[in-house]
Image 1 (cartoon, helix red, strand yellow):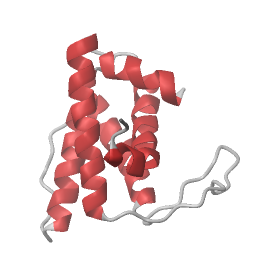
Image 2 (cartoon, helix red, strand yellow):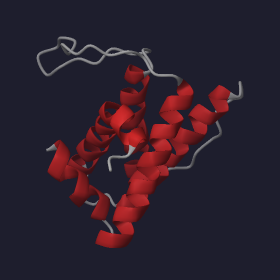
Image 3 (cartoon, one colour):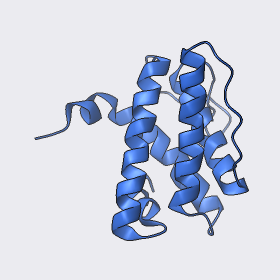
Image 4 (cartoon, helix red, strand yellow):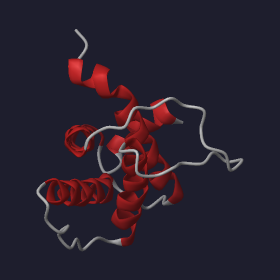
Length: 136
């Protein structure tokens, strides 16, 4: 039976996975640990925002920082805070309803669990090897 959460947020989860896959593709040395650290730091930042606090300082290596930034751009777009542009410089022709910060936090938590599961199952880049089949 399909997971109701994944059905409802499949588009958001796919967007986040695409941002991570793009980051992995840019950095052949990047591991799932780097992706997990970047996503976890971003999730903490959104949690702080939801509580009206300043985002905690995150000490991230370059790969984790790139993961953080790329996923943040995607999440900010899904929150309705940013505009994405296609390769030809135009906004995508996609109808999208903005999500709440709490919804984004839940999606990031789901991505974290996926990273951890696929890393255990497939090694240092198990998550990337899994998602690249779906996001190209």
